[in-house]
Image 1 (cartoon, rainbow, N blue to C red):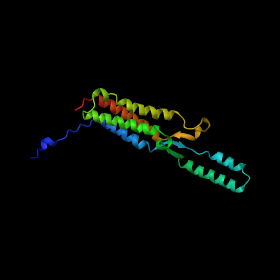
Image 2 (image 1 turned 120 degrees about the horizontal axis):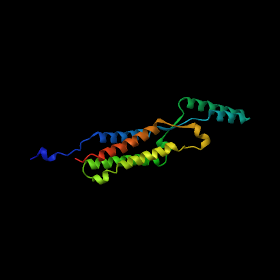
Image 3 (image 1 turned 90 degrees about the horizontal axis):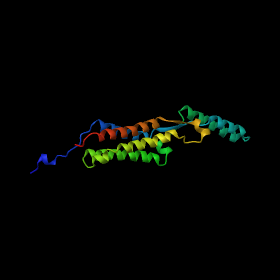
Image 4 (image 1 turned 90 degrees about the vertical axis):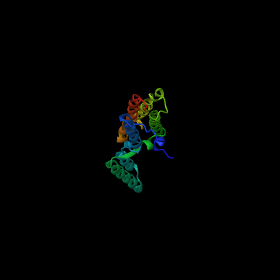
Length: 177
């Protein structure tokens, strides 16, 4: 005979800490595809290069390149996402945040000790540290730094990683159910 009471599964309660953690992880994933850098193209350089050519065809190509660069700049520049800009940091940020979520979820389910779970915030903080370091370091040499700006994805990625750290820290203060 089937007894409904014996087949119930204990589902951990989701509190504010878990919502902050999951919201931060979702923001990290979303931000990885948003513009981390906005690159403006050097229109004047294309125009000056075109003036150095004596061949009319080459002058025409350089002029077209300058016009296209101006059009791209008018549309906001070239958008470079974190996936495009980085080789390993993007994967490390995503992995650190995902690992923090897994540790907190395992703690909520009672499979990880409180001693282990109370350090999960370090994973989010490490991800935020990686993002912050990339935000402070220009991706191009100094003479070209005027052409590169941080995009909204950089702030979103930093905010998401910080939210993961805060959510993990808050969840460590809650006892497992």
